Image 1 (cartoon, rainbow, N blue to C red):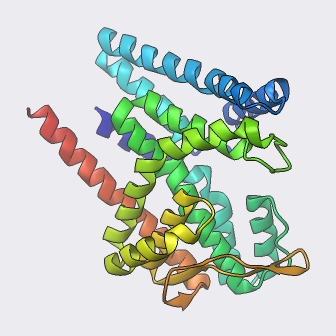
Image 2 (image 1 turned 135 degrees about the vertical axis):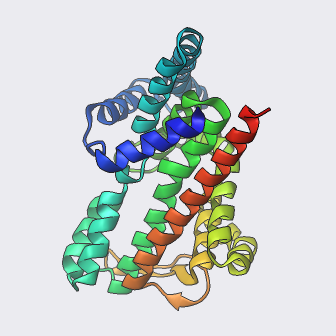
Length: 308
Protein backbone atom coordinates (compact mmCIF):
# COMPACT_ATOMS: atom_id res chain seq x y z
CA UNK A 1 0.00 0.00 0.00
CA UNK A 2 2.89 2.39 0.74
CA UNK A 3 4.31 1.94 -2.75
CA UNK A 4 0.91 2.56 -4.34
CA UNK A 5 0.27 5.64 -2.20
CA UNK A 6 3.68 7.09 -3.04
CA UNK A 7 3.33 6.38 -6.76
CA UNK A 8 -0.13 7.95 -6.97
CA UNK A 9 0.89 11.00 -4.92
CA UNK A 10 3.93 11.64 -7.13
CA UNK A 11 1.85 11.28 -10.30
CA UNK A 12 -0.82 13.66 -9.03
CA UNK A 13 1.86 16.13 -8.00
CA UNK A 14 3.31 16.10 -11.50
CA UNK A 15 -0.09 16.68 -13.12
CA UNK A 16 -1.49 19.15 -10.61
CA UNK A 17 1.25 20.52 -8.36
CA UNK A 18 0.58 22.50 -5.22
CA UNK A 19 0.84 26.24 -5.60
CA UNK A 20 4.05 27.56 -4.08
CA UNK A 21 1.95 29.99 -2.02
CA UNK A 22 -0.62 27.44 -0.86
CA UNK A 23 -2.44 28.14 2.38
CA UNK A 24 -1.26 25.05 4.25
CA UNK A 25 2.45 25.59 3.74
CA UNK A 26 2.20 29.34 4.26
CA UNK A 27 0.03 28.83 7.32
CA UNK A 28 2.53 26.46 8.90
CA UNK A 29 5.40 28.85 8.15
CA UNK A 30 3.49 31.65 9.88
CA UNK A 31 2.75 29.36 12.83
CA UNK A 32 6.43 28.46 13.15
CA UNK A 33 7.48 32.10 13.13
CA UNK A 34 4.80 32.97 15.66
CA UNK A 35 6.14 30.28 17.99
CA UNK A 36 9.61 31.74 17.62
CA UNK A 37 8.36 35.23 18.44
CA UNK A 38 6.40 34.01 21.49
CA UNK A 39 9.00 31.63 22.93
CA UNK A 40 12.42 32.91 21.94
CA UNK A 41 13.97 34.61 24.95
CA UNK A 42 17.45 33.32 24.20
CA UNK A 43 17.22 30.05 26.13
CA UNK A 44 17.71 26.50 24.87
CA UNK A 45 14.77 24.99 26.75
CA UNK A 46 12.38 27.44 25.10
CA UNK A 47 13.53 26.19 21.72
CA UNK A 48 12.87 22.62 22.82
CA UNK A 49 9.33 23.43 23.95
CA UNK A 50 8.53 25.38 20.77
CA UNK A 51 9.89 22.54 18.59
CA UNK A 52 7.75 20.00 20.41
CA UNK A 53 4.64 22.14 19.98
CA UNK A 54 5.34 22.56 16.26
CA UNK A 55 6.12 18.92 15.48
CA UNK A 56 4.69 16.43 17.96
CA UNK A 57 0.93 17.20 17.85
CA UNK A 58 0.86 17.23 14.03
CA UNK A 59 2.81 13.99 13.76
CA UNK A 60 0.73 12.28 16.42
CA UNK A 61 -2.51 13.46 14.82
CA UNK A 62 -1.55 12.07 11.40
CA UNK A 63 -0.33 8.82 12.94
CA UNK A 64 -3.54 8.27 14.93
CA UNK A 65 -5.73 9.19 11.97
CA UNK A 66 -3.89 6.73 9.72
CA UNK A 67 -4.23 3.97 12.33
CA UNK A 68 -7.97 4.57 12.78
CA UNK A 69 -8.61 4.70 9.03
CA UNK A 70 -6.58 1.55 8.47
CA UNK A 71 -8.74 -0.28 10.99
CA UNK A 72 -11.93 1.06 9.43
CA UNK A 73 -11.16 0.81 5.73
CA UNK A 74 -8.00 0.12 3.73
CA UNK A 75 -9.09 2.36 0.81
CA UNK A 76 -9.67 5.28 3.20
CA UNK A 77 -6.23 4.74 4.72
CA UNK A 78 -4.75 4.73 1.22
CA UNK A 79 -6.48 8.02 0.35
CA UNK A 80 -5.22 9.54 3.59
CA UNK A 81 -1.64 8.50 2.81
CA UNK A 82 -1.92 9.95 -0.70
CA UNK A 83 -3.27 13.25 0.66
CA UNK A 84 -0.48 13.63 3.24
CA UNK A 85 2.19 12.67 0.70
CA UNK A 86 0.79 15.16 -1.80
CA UNK A 87 1.32 17.89 0.78
CA UNK A 88 4.78 16.79 1.90
CA UNK A 89 6.57 15.12 -1.04
CA UNK A 90 7.14 16.35 -4.57
CA UNK A 91 9.51 17.75 -7.17
CA UNK A 92 7.18 20.52 -8.24
CA UNK A 93 7.37 22.07 -4.78
CA UNK A 94 10.89 23.28 -5.55
CA UNK A 95 11.50 22.75 -9.26
CA UNK A 96 9.84 25.95 -10.53
CA UNK A 97 12.90 28.12 -9.94
CA UNK A 98 15.31 25.43 -11.11
CA UNK A 99 13.44 24.90 -14.38
CA UNK A 100 13.18 28.64 -14.96
CA UNK A 101 16.91 29.13 -14.39
CA UNK A 102 17.71 26.18 -16.66
CA UNK A 103 15.53 27.55 -19.47
CA UNK A 104 16.88 31.10 -19.13
CA UNK A 105 20.49 29.92 -19.12
CA UNK A 106 19.89 27.85 -22.26
CA UNK A 107 18.57 30.98 -23.99
CA UNK A 108 21.55 33.01 -22.79
CA UNK A 109 19.41 35.25 -20.56
CA UNK A 110 21.86 35.27 -17.67
CA UNK A 111 20.54 38.47 -16.07
CA UNK A 112 17.03 37.00 -15.80
CA UNK A 113 18.49 33.76 -14.46
CA UNK A 114 20.24 35.76 -11.73
CA UNK A 115 16.89 37.32 -10.76
CA UNK A 116 15.23 33.90 -10.45
CA UNK A 117 18.17 32.56 -8.45
CA UNK A 118 17.99 35.53 -6.08
CA UNK A 119 14.29 34.85 -5.50
CA UNK A 120 15.02 31.18 -4.82
CA UNK A 121 17.91 31.60 -2.41
CA UNK A 122 16.65 34.89 -0.90
CA UNK A 123 20.07 36.45 -1.50
CA UNK A 124 21.38 38.99 -3.98
CA UNK A 125 22.79 37.17 -7.01
CA UNK A 126 23.38 40.08 -9.38
CA UNK A 127 27.19 39.74 -9.30
CA UNK A 128 27.39 36.01 -9.95
CA UNK A 129 29.10 34.90 -13.14
CA UNK A 130 27.20 32.52 -15.48
CA UNK A 131 29.22 29.59 -14.14
CA UNK A 132 28.44 30.59 -10.56
CA UNK A 133 24.72 30.84 -11.36
CA UNK A 134 24.80 27.28 -12.72
CA UNK A 135 26.85 26.06 -9.78
CA UNK A 136 24.58 27.53 -7.11
CA UNK A 137 21.44 26.34 -8.92
CA UNK A 138 22.81 22.78 -9.01
CA UNK A 139 23.65 22.95 -5.31
CA UNK A 140 20.15 24.18 -4.47
CA UNK A 141 18.58 21.57 -6.77
CA UNK A 142 20.42 18.68 -5.13
CA UNK A 143 19.63 19.77 -1.57
CA UNK A 144 16.01 20.67 -2.40
CA UNK A 145 15.40 17.30 -4.08
CA UNK A 146 16.61 15.63 -0.91
CA UNK A 147 14.53 17.73 1.48
CA UNK A 148 11.38 17.64 -0.64
CA UNK A 149 11.50 14.11 -2.01
CA UNK A 150 14.10 11.62 -0.80
CA UNK A 151 14.19 12.60 2.87
CA UNK A 152 10.41 12.48 3.38
CA UNK A 153 10.20 9.19 1.43
CA UNK A 154 12.66 7.52 3.83
CA UNK A 155 10.55 8.51 6.82
CA UNK A 156 7.34 7.57 4.98
CA UNK A 157 8.68 4.04 4.51
CA UNK A 158 9.47 3.90 8.24
CA UNK A 159 6.39 5.55 9.78
CA UNK A 160 3.91 5.97 6.96
CA UNK A 161 2.39 9.41 6.23
CA UNK A 162 3.22 10.58 9.76
CA UNK A 163 6.89 9.99 8.99
CA UNK A 164 6.80 12.16 5.87
CA UNK A 165 5.10 14.97 7.78
CA UNK A 166 7.53 14.56 10.70
CA UNK A 167 10.53 14.99 8.40
CA UNK A 168 9.12 18.00 6.54
CA UNK A 169 8.07 19.75 9.74
CA UNK A 170 11.52 19.26 11.26
CA UNK A 171 13.08 20.50 8.02
CA UNK A 172 10.98 23.68 8.04
CA UNK A 173 11.93 24.41 11.64
CA UNK A 174 15.62 23.91 10.90
CA UNK A 175 15.43 26.31 7.97
CA UNK A 176 13.23 28.93 9.61
CA UNK A 177 15.01 29.02 12.96
CA UNK A 178 18.53 28.78 11.60
CA UNK A 179 20.55 31.16 13.75
CA UNK A 180 21.41 34.41 12.08
CA UNK A 181 18.90 34.33 9.22
CA UNK A 182 17.20 37.72 8.78
CA UNK A 183 13.71 36.30 8.32
CA UNK A 184 13.71 34.40 11.60
CA UNK A 185 16.07 36.30 13.88
CA UNK A 186 16.16 33.24 16.14
CA UNK A 187 18.77 33.32 18.86
CA UNK A 188 21.53 30.71 18.72
CA UNK A 189 20.38 29.02 21.93
CA UNK A 190 16.75 28.87 20.79
CA UNK A 191 17.62 27.43 17.37
CA UNK A 192 20.13 24.89 18.69
CA UNK A 193 17.61 22.12 19.40
CA UNK A 194 15.91 22.44 15.99
CA UNK A 195 19.29 22.23 14.25
CA UNK A 196 20.44 19.25 16.28
CA UNK A 197 17.09 17.45 15.99
CA UNK A 198 17.08 17.74 12.20
CA UNK A 199 20.70 16.65 12.04
CA UNK A 200 19.71 13.41 13.79
CA UNK A 201 16.49 12.96 11.80
CA UNK A 202 18.33 13.56 8.52
CA UNK A 203 21.40 11.43 9.30
CA UNK A 204 20.22 8.28 7.49
CA UNK A 205 18.18 9.96 4.71
CA UNK A 206 21.12 12.19 3.69
CA UNK A 207 23.38 9.18 3.31
CA UNK A 208 20.80 7.10 1.47
CA UNK A 209 20.21 9.95 -0.98
CA UNK A 210 23.94 10.32 -1.58
CA UNK A 211 24.36 6.58 -2.12
CA UNK A 212 21.55 6.66 -4.68
CA UNK A 213 23.26 9.53 -6.53
CA UNK A 214 26.44 7.49 -6.57
CA UNK A 215 24.72 4.36 -7.88
CA UNK A 216 23.01 6.14 -10.79
CA UNK A 217 26.00 8.40 -11.51
CA UNK A 218 29.76 8.00 -11.32
CA UNK A 219 30.01 5.71 -8.29
CA UNK A 220 33.74 5.83 -7.64
CA UNK A 221 34.07 9.60 -7.94
CA UNK A 222 30.98 10.12 -5.79
CA UNK A 223 32.36 7.92 -3.01
CA UNK A 224 35.81 9.52 -3.21
CA UNK A 225 34.40 13.05 -3.04
CA UNK A 226 32.09 12.08 -0.16
CA UNK A 227 34.99 10.59 1.77
CA UNK A 228 37.54 13.33 1.09
CA UNK A 229 35.53 16.56 0.76
CA UNK A 230 32.21 16.35 2.65
CA UNK A 231 33.73 17.22 6.03
CA UNK A 232 35.03 20.54 4.72
CA UNK A 233 31.49 21.91 4.23
CA UNK A 234 29.92 23.90 7.08
CA UNK A 235 26.71 21.83 7.15
CA UNK A 236 27.69 18.13 7.45
CA UNK A 237 24.58 16.71 5.76
CA UNK A 238 24.75 19.22 2.90
CA UNK A 239 28.44 18.47 2.54
CA UNK A 240 27.70 14.78 2.03
CA UNK A 241 24.92 15.48 -0.48
CA UNK A 242 26.84 18.05 -2.48
CA UNK A 243 30.17 16.27 -2.48
CA UNK A 244 28.57 12.96 -3.45
CA UNK A 245 26.29 14.60 -6.00
CA UNK A 246 29.16 16.57 -7.55
CA UNK A 247 31.23 13.41 -7.82
CA UNK A 248 28.34 11.50 -9.36
CA UNK A 249 27.87 14.27 -11.95
CA UNK A 250 31.54 14.86 -12.61
CA UNK A 251 31.23 18.58 -11.91
CA UNK A 252 32.82 21.07 -9.54
CA UNK A 253 30.57 22.67 -6.93
CA UNK A 254 31.28 24.92 -3.97
CA UNK A 255 34.15 27.31 -4.59
CA UNK A 256 34.24 31.11 -4.72
CA UNK A 257 31.20 33.31 -5.34
CA UNK A 258 31.15 36.98 -6.36
CA UNK A 259 28.53 38.71 -4.24
CA UNK A 260 28.05 41.92 -2.25
CA UNK A 261 31.12 43.50 -3.82
CA UNK A 262 33.54 40.84 -2.65
CA UNK A 263 34.53 37.23 -3.25
CA UNK A 264 33.16 34.69 -0.78
CA UNK A 265 35.30 31.60 -0.60
CA UNK A 266 33.78 28.19 0.04
CA UNK A 267 35.34 24.71 0.02
CA UNK A 268 35.52 23.10 -3.40
CA UNK A 269 33.46 19.95 -3.90
CA UNK A 270 33.52 17.43 -6.72
CA UNK A 271 35.96 16.82 -9.54
CA UNK A 272 35.80 17.29 -13.28
CA UNK A 273 34.44 20.21 -15.27
CA UNK A 274 33.25 23.60 -14.13
CA UNK A 275 29.48 23.93 -13.82
CA UNK A 276 27.62 25.23 -16.86
CA UNK A 277 24.16 25.07 -18.42
CA UNK A 278 24.67 21.49 -19.63
CA UNK A 279 25.17 20.29 -16.06
CA UNK A 280 21.86 21.86 -15.05
CA UNK A 281 20.10 19.33 -17.28
CA UNK A 282 22.43 16.53 -16.15
CA UNK A 283 21.42 17.20 -12.55
CA UNK A 284 17.74 16.76 -13.41
CA UNK A 285 18.57 13.41 -15.03
CA UNK A 286 20.56 12.28 -11.99
CA UNK A 287 17.71 13.10 -9.60
CA UNK A 288 15.08 11.35 -11.75
CA UNK A 289 17.24 8.24 -12.14
CA UNK A 290 17.69 8.12 -8.38
CA UNK A 291 13.94 8.41 -7.81
CA UNK A 292 13.19 5.62 -10.32
CA UNK A 293 15.70 3.42 -8.52
CA UNK A 294 14.08 4.19 -5.16
CA UNK A 295 10.60 3.42 -6.47
CA UNK A 296 11.82 0.13 -7.94
CA UNK A 297 13.47 -0.91 -4.67
CA UNK A 298 10.48 0.15 -2.55
CA UNK A 299 8.16 -1.75 -4.88
CA UNK A 300 10.29 -4.91 -4.66
CA UNK A 301 10.49 -4.73 -0.87
CA UNK A 302 6.75 -4.12 -0.46
CA UNK A 303 5.94 -6.96 -2.85
CA UNK A 304 8.22 -9.33 -1.00
CA UNK A 305 6.66 -8.26 2.31
CA UNK A 306 3.11 -8.82 1.02
CA UNK A 307 4.05 -12.28 -0.20
CA UNK A 308 5.32 -13.14 3.25
